[in-house]
Length: 187
Image (tube, rainbow, N blue to C red; front, side, top):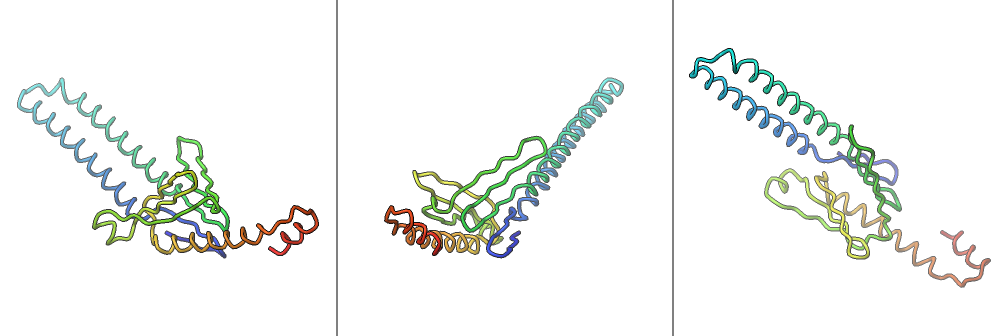
């Protein structure tokens, strides 16, 4: 989901990530139920109901609570992973319930190349791709599950061009205090 305000973008991961989180929960739940049913069938065939019933219920409830807690943490992580693109910076904000906030700041003047990587047919059909940001000193930063990646990429490239045009104007410095302040005030 992309929110645009004035000259900045606020990105949240694609909704397909929520779909993946719920399917992961359902698959783990089915695995837990199948293991519990196998144990119940084994106790029924062995005619030892009193030994296994309470233990199976306790183990099943432990795994079910663990799976539900993981689901809640994944949903919180999905909605708290934000990318904010400003005129001069890209802010990547990751926060969870259990972990401290992780804020990463990328300066647009240090970005050398922005590209889009699309893998698999489903990601191409649903338009959730990966944006690769290459920075100076051969650093790359992938941004995963970005909705409308071409819009985001063109926005970043336009802001990079704007930063380069500002940088070209400031290269005219003469190392004289008064002349340099006049050049900076033109910007």
